[in-house]
Length: 283
Image (cartoon, rainbow, N blue to C red; front, side):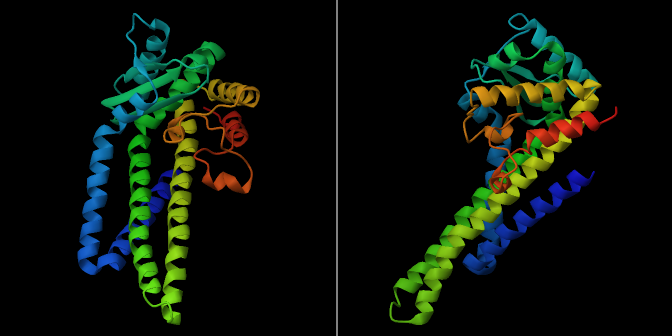
């Protein structure tokens, strides 16, 4: 519940930023236009994000005949999660990873890599699939899509406003106020999109913890997922995992998560912390 409240508050903050920037850019008219653009971008992302991410990842849909074991696991866990069975895809790559996508539980898909199926045993694979089904059940795909859309819209509006300040500054080169406007515009270009990105990443990390917890309940145990994450992280140390940056936030594991200051830009919490929390859970 705490993670859900955090997500709502963070999304509200991002929405407030974009509306404020719209008003700064064009007063009441700018506010209305910014709201319309945000709604349009969310509509497009909501309806087509699954097709885009599956295509860009090279995922191929498989039938129960093609992958009977994988389909059986997905079907059993979907029943346990009380959601419709999602479409099943396989990505032909040695990198062990998985993700879920789709606008809602009725229109969803789960994709796993061949490397994941080779690396994990059935117990661990069930833990990973349960985590991905938790994302579907919790509608995290929609939440992350909205967050990404709002972050992109914030960046666009900031650039429009900032270039306006900088243009005003350059037109008054001998005026101190003009120089201040140029500096303010440059700072806005740097700081506001950075803030939007940090909020977006925070939302993503919050949803990962929630999916770990929900997935453990769906699988009936947290230990399969904990073991799977440990194996995937160990594999990544030997052979770095490098998913497409545009879709990295959707996967179950990101090699960019860590303990350094750069972790604020990570889409995933530190894997060690995730494993620790899972092993401390009681179902």
